[in-house]
Amino acid sequence: MTRPVPIVPSLLPSLGILLMTLGPAPAVPADEAVLAKGERVFRNQCRGCHSLTPGVHIAGPSLHGVVGRNAGEVADFEYSRVLQESQLVWTPEVLDRFLADPDALLPGTRMVFWGLPEDARRPLIDYLGHVGAP
Image (cartoon, rainbow, N blue to C red):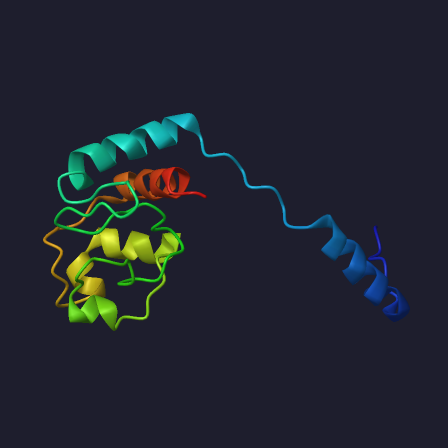
């Protein structure tokens, strides 16, 4: 039977320093097949209203850099009041909820979209994160 190794309190500061010097874990590259599927979803479902070029808006705002961005804050685009006041950050989880049913998450949004099935949302979100990465 294996016994747990006790952590000696005097070693905790050294352990913390060691972990800080290691830095964050490297990002795992997205699977190329997933990105290809996400690109197809964007092309078929999003491109008519959104561009991926910074500052280029169509009926909806540019989606370049959308993952991690504050909702309703792209310059030179007039958002609905509900989106401006939402205080949402477009994390992958929030994007997933929004893309499933925009009206359920933000009643009153001007986005005319009935939602995507689950198997299309994750690849799209991965693709948007990939193409909008700095």
